[in-house]
Every structure is written in C-alpha cells, then in structure tokens.
Length: 122
Image 1 (cartoon, rainbow, N blue to C red):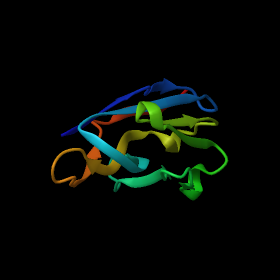
Image 2: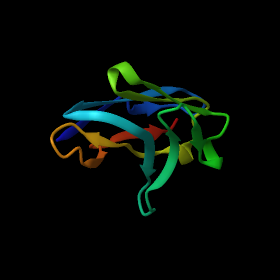
Image 3: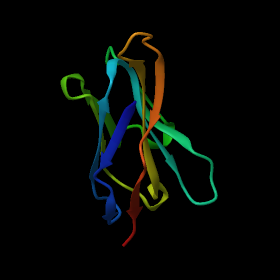
C-alpha cells in the first residue's frame, strides 16, 4: 500500500504565502503524476496543479502566476508553493499521487492524502 502524508496548511492573511508538502511512502515502484486538488465548502473538488514525472506542469487558471508545484523524486515528495493568497483560495487541499506499486504484480495505484486546511482571512 501507498500512504501520503500532507503538511503545511494553516491560517494566513490575504497576500501571504504558504508551502504545502506531501510525502509518499510504502511499496512504490514508480510515481507518474503528482498533484494538488482543493475543495471549498459547498463546491466540488477541483484540480489546482499537477506535475508529471518529466516535470511538465499544469495549473488551474485561477492560480497561474501565484502557485508553483514542484517535486523531489528522490524523496517521493510533491510541494505546492502558494503566494499572493486570496480569500477564495480557502479550502481543504488534497494531495494526489499516481504510480505503480512494487511487488509481483506491479499494479497501478491512485492515492489521496488526508487533506490539509488552508484558510486565507484577515
């Protein structure tokens, strides 16, 4: 099994910055895409940013120019640097990691973190 541990959420004032981290552990053979999603109260979960194994990135229009996703392949960790935070960025942020489990069958996995709250308020 693959486990994800997220950290870095919290309360920040508008215009402030936060850095989220998500570390994957367990029986991992390889990791393909890593990403961050968020879900605000009463809204559907949406993609915030994603990064492939080759380093290609994809961002939601609402965060382009403010958020940066990166990954450390040696640590199986993905980061989300958030700057210029706005109240509308308030949500629970979830890490998502997709890859292949180690073992005889090398089956694919699609793992989710437990979520971390980000609140942007003065």
